[in-house]
Length: 129
Ligand SMILES: [Zn+2]
Image (cartoon, rainbow, N blue to C red; front, side, top):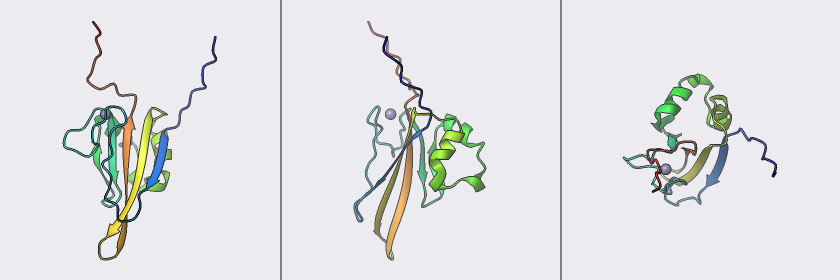
């Protein structure tokens, strides 16, 4: 019998930085391929956090419920990965932090974080015939 991999319980947190001046990328859901910023959200998207506004642009019902337990004063982008673990997410959650910069009155950098929940099966119930 092959040995099972030990359970990994930390959310996966990836940080990427785009070259300065490059337009923010259209991040797609790694599971179904839908663009993460659109009016119609795919069922895997857990949240979209825009640090420029300091708020969530989108939260799934499940994420909103979990994150509701976090004291906003304790929330900080630097420890977002730890916060996700604290509220009970494991390695079924992939958070992608994207930093991009452009010119406003001077160079400005923005950081957005997208969360994808691989534990969400969505509405598709596969019934094979
Ligand atoms: Zn999806």
